[in-house]
Image (cartoon, rainbow, N blue to C red; front, side):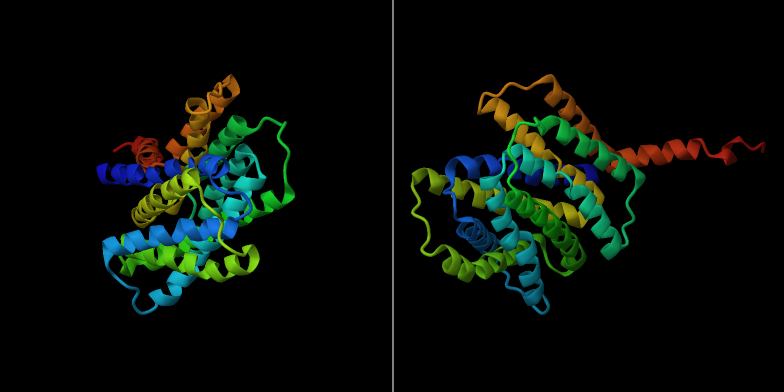
Length: 300
């Protein structure tokens, strides 16, 4: 139980770091360069982890890295970057909040991990909490931004489950570095062809990309894939709901936004949804079911 709790804490590093990405992208990174933004985010992070792990791909990991790098990093980063530029943070976060359900269904089909009732209940409550926390009804919705966000969510769900399925024969740092490098390399020719020369980066943009690449990518993805290796996909997906929670709390602490009663209720619901997906809750539920078993009531 203690080991599972530690892995939950490790996994939580990822969505907390990702929860700051929309804010940093919107405030500090140049608009109109989603492809270069993804390249600059992925390649330095991958090279940093490769420098630490010092292991090259082997065997099937050459093509697996290409597939996972495209799904989880390359195309995903570009779509998220585009969504962050086109959508209000709340709308983008609400769309991405549905990823736990997508991960559970994908894990069911690819890994035969049947969704637990507590995971499904947690997903429903958590998504409701995120919507309550972020929905104001006043934000304009860009269709292209919504499409980019939905596509990113679906692609990442498939990519994460495939990574969980394939990564038993490679350590986390190595497989993460290979994916990041592959995802960045795949995007380079598209960035040159579509966006032309790289953007001119000022001091704030360089610092922003440095943070996004090192903290919200290298560290975050290493923690995320470590969690996927040791925990059920449903549990990891629900921990991911900390992403929009971080965004809201960031707004209250940095941007000086006031936390409304509606947002507070949404936060509590989201935390409840995350809690329902944790292994300790599943064990407690199993104990309760065992104690209520009809066989316990039969005369000896």
